[in-house]
Length: 116
Image 1 (cartoon, rainbow, N blue to C red):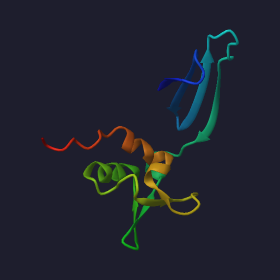
Image 2: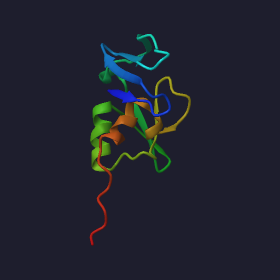
Image 3: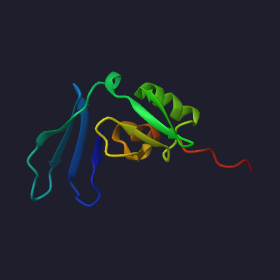
């Protein structure tokens, strides 16, 4: 997506994921323009190869695919606070701290307000 940076008027940040490459591009039109440039900062393996383990009640469950984790988030079984681990990760992290899972929580609407 494209994001305008509040602290840097005129600067636009574009983030894209194509061919399993995460790219970030900065562009600007202020008096000191930023040269457009794209950098690949992370190679992301296909979803089918990423497996996650979940810590629940002192036990490890899984492995689960990202698609399964998405269903678990939609059903409420996976929350931002759920501890998860995947290969290459140092220790257990909250699901919201894992890049591949954090977006599951940004696309879901917040809980509805209490009934009046």
